[in-house]
Amino acid sequence: MDRKYMLRDFQWLVERVTGLFGLTSKELLTGGKQRKTVTARSVLCYWATRELGMSAVAISKRLNIAASTASESAARGLRIVEEQGFKLSDEVI
Image 1 (tube, rainbow, N blue to C red):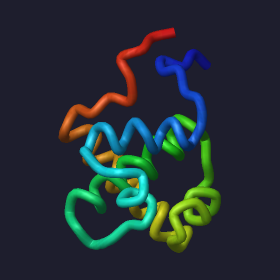
Image 2 (image 1 turned 90 degrees about the vertical axis):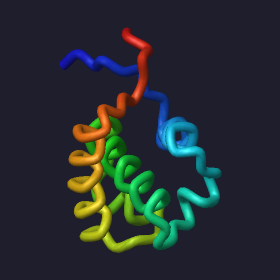
Image 3 (image 1 turned 60 degrees about the horizontal axis):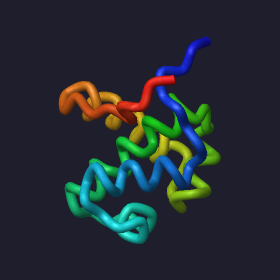
Image 4 (image 1 turned 60 degrees about the vertical axis):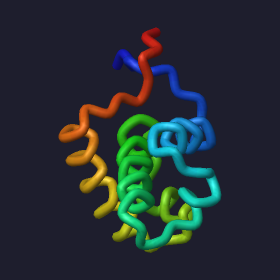
């Protein structure tokens, strides 16, 4: 399968999402109930599952959340990405 995006690892993905939302890595990874943080974490979960192939369990361990929460966040992230037109990268292989 051709990959449109050149991905490195989870940390690269964190940096991409923090840049997109204007958050620090600490804000993104520690979470919280602020709308901006929840939205960013949802996008992170979606891209981590879709583009990195990470499982909900693996993501949940990185974000210190339940696996079911990671799955729900990924589904919400898909909607956000589609509605907002977010792109992971403009870098084409």
